[in-house]
Length: 203
Image (cartoon, rainbow, N blue to C red; front, side):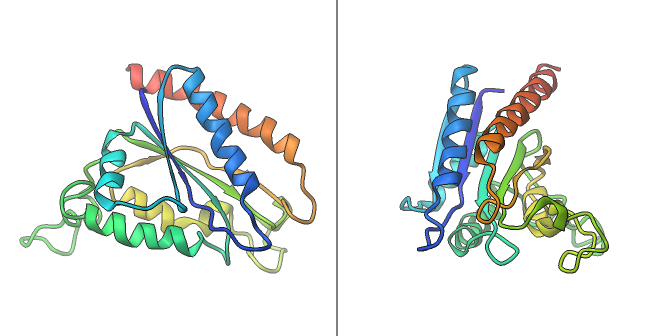
């Protein structure tokens, strides 16, 4: 592995300044740079140039999306990024159409991705507690996992043939934060990924 793209999907609100997500981005940047890898960062506060963002995706061996959870999904600014950048990517940079052929249009939808070999990781912050997930007795998520909740984002990235790595989550960051423990878990998570990725990319 050589190149890491980190996307800070946070959108600032009066009640959410984004310090935690920015810190996690910085921690990941330092982690990979200390391992000798090149890192590029995109934030939703940047002036987004779709062509440049597509080139970053093609350049990257690993893409980390660092995002808070706003109303059960990503912030609007990042959804806008997806709509504009990824839609432009369907013209050949990220995928060749949707993978189907006119001879057999009923099959193979979503198989036209051009980023085979590129890994991605979601790193998500929640106000929800960990106990709200994977428990059918809990009212809101009804037994669903974090990855179930973010299934549309996973499918958008799979559409480009990218391969998912285990998701990292910070839970209950407003009402019951354990930020220092989260930072330790985050570094441990990255260390585990780094070990697996080194094996994967060396084979």
